[in-house]
Image (cartoon, rainbow, N blue to C red; front, side):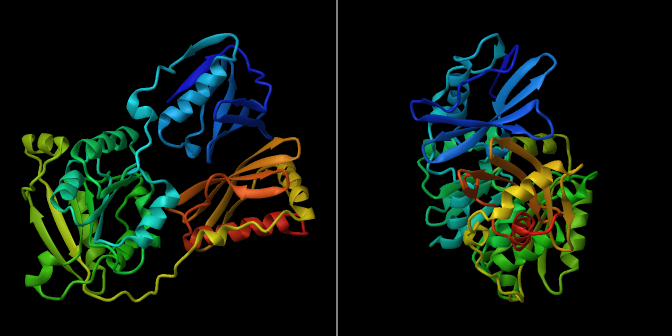
Amino acid sequence: MPHFHTTHPQDFCLPLKSGVYEFVCKFTHTRNHNQSLILVRYEDCEFFLLESVRDNGTLYKYHKATRIDPIGIIKDALEILRTRSHGILGHNLSKNTPKQCTKSPFLLSRTQTYEFVLHHNKPLSIEVGFGSGRHVLDLATKNPNELFLGLEIHTPSIEQVLRQITLLGLTNLYISHIDARILLQLIPNASLKNIYVHFPVPWHKKPHRRVISPMFLHHAMRTISLSNDCPTALPQSGFLHVRTDDREYFDYTLQLVLALPKTTMLVEKNANLAVVSKYEARWKKQEKHIFDGKIFSVLPPTDTQKSLQNGDFVFYGISEYVVQNIKHLIALPTLPKIVRKTYFLHIDAIYQHDENYVIALCLGDFDEPQNAFVLIQNGIMRYLNAPPLPTQAAIQAHQLFIHILESKDKH
């Protein structure tokens, strides 16, 4: 992670402008004064740099929950502050490589990803956790008239596949680091061709973090194209393809599939695919077994997917009670962590600069939480960059948050 380290906290005389960068102000944690957020604006994007005062000096890095791409934008912002700092102990801000300062049109933001899955005009397939990208790159190369969306949270894997997209001249493969479990909830019925989940992390000790879950399977069956209930038609029908070397994980997936009211599943063991990842090649060399399951949806969706919009996250001005309630929250022994039957809302931290505030939230579904920052500045309240993805759980949590801020009663 890009950073620099100084002997003591720096006074950058904010606000500060340097080229296209604007360092707006510093918000200090109201419970831990050794931690602050520096709000940075770059063109139409915003992000936070984190100042952390420690026993061995002060560390400056970016807040990973507000990361923007390419990473070179953040590195340059840190370098601007580093050159204005005294008592530098160390840094890793090497000169940007071309890949670190080139913004790829095939890397989608959270909002762009949401719009993409709603409004695509060609058959769309999704691969969850594409790793080296060999499989999804092969799919996109062999099917130029279809669209593909690769979802991955590992930054080096994303950068590697974006380079391959350019080298291969592909125009039908897009990449996002969004949580697939959240995104799938927002995709309209029967609008996907296939979903691929190859070698997911088993998470034996934390099964709630698994990609495959009853909810994921429900939305996968809802979103993939409906197949004819005829075995000969299955190869032309949409499916969810789960591939794993972990027998326990495969058995877990099979149990979830068998709990569906009706479905068709093809099971294979040690099948040979056209493309083999380097990890799969290693496992085969070790004579580990590979398990495949293709699950087909044979029932029409029973629920109607509401088209949820980011408009559900609008803040309607700041009433006289908002600042009063924020100050009350700051004075509480602990910040609220509220759990309801279908959603939760955690107020993780509040940062302050004069009468302006940043509120860090974690909200939404229990197993697929979302992080967000609410910026209250100059009489305006809004989410930093973009609101959470509009799942029902996130919208309910947002409405509860508004109620807390707008309430005339103390909480």
